Amino acid sequence: MAGKNIIIVGAGPGGLSAGMILQKRGFKVTILEKESVAGGRNAPLKQDGYTFDTGPTFLMMNYILKEIFEEAGKKAEDYMKVKRLDPMYRLKFTDKEVMISSGFEAMKAEISKSFPGNEDALAKFMKTEKKRYGNMFACLQKDYSKLRHFLRPVFLKALPSLQLHKTFWQNLSSYFKQADLKICFTFQAKYIGMSPWECPAAFTMIPYVEHEYGIYHVMGGLNQISAGMARAFKELGGELLLDTPVEELLIEKKKVRGVRLKDGREMLADEVIVNADFAYAMSTLAKKAALKKYSSEKLKKKRYSCSTFMLYLGVKKQYNIPHHNIVFAENYKKNVEEIFKKGSPSEDMSAYIQNASVTDSTLAPAGKSTIYILVPCPNKASGTNWQNIKEEYKNKVLDMLEKRTELKDLRENIETEIVYTPDDWENKHNVFYGATFNLAHNLGQMLYFRPRNKFEELENCYLVGGGTHPGSGLPTIYESARITSNLISKKYGVPFTPPTTLSKKESFD
Image: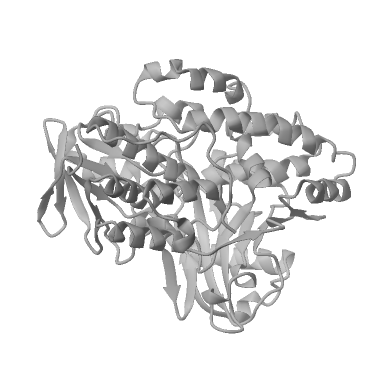
């Protein structure tokens, strides 16, 4: 029964993906975005001729992105140019650096050079994790609206792969023995804002996916994905209203019938999809709903990811370092424990550095470059006063980078800068607690136990984004949009083809 009106709150990756798919299927979709540009945390930051990605900088599992465009009758290649990166990234320890490649033989040789005697374990890792991925990803593509969905054959097949008794770190110990080598395959827990010593073993499939399918850069920045989606959505006849903040959901007897905008206007819809940060949306946009499971008080007690301290630097020169770099703290485990257990910004910090201009000349003026620096830090539940320490902490980060990397003269070449603390994530992007990776991905907050795509406390209300199933990260956010779109289509009898057991793997170099 197409033609129904759908309102989507937020033009982030999830909202745009759902908008494209549902508009293609005959629904009348309106996306409301508070900012003047689409993308949410996947939008560009522009200053003084430099362009930065606000959030994600790694494009993994690009075949899923391709599928989302195909669901909308489009080709991703028509909206963006994508380049595969190999080596994928460089890891810097205090005594060595490791170049991580998606090529099996190149990676095996690198392990042999840096961690002699461990190279044969790579084949075991790839073989075992391929099976996990095959079982788990098919499982994640399903919705978990009802408890009985755990009895589906696809979940029962995947259950052993969850390894409920193991952490990410413990699982890697079954392949590799040296601590630094295990870090090479477990730091990816940061992609979902967790500690590898706490993150469930199921997420070991993340490094497998990197090594099997590679990492890509989108020319112009990953923000071009959202720009392309916005263009495709409008070409399909969808209405994208920028500079249109939503004040609250219109709720009557636990049914969402539309939204009230900041300017007082009301817009009605048959279904509302919420792409805002989940905890922010339920504590702010749905505050009059008297929610029980997700009341404001209960939301405060949920587990959340870490936050990030960000430096977006426009510099007057170009550096000959890889596109992606990670510098590990001298005591990485202590660094992680300070963030996740003590809730204190580390003096001995780890940092991710993106030097995208080595690949993409469009991001900065000629001869100059963008340097994107991300330092994992505690979210705002820790009580850290970032306003007081912001400048001091920025200088500590720069001190560390000038000491431990080739960026020896970074300070003197900074032409423009943007600094984000957890306060900025909360205040500028409405991220609850400034937890940039949303609700934590512990077992008690996954699948059925994560906020559901068809939101369980309100009728006519659906969720997309990192705060719902299957979780944070661009590929899973795209899948959340596909799951939600399929649930709405099923409700109205609109035919669709469910995703294949394993998504198609071809790339679009």
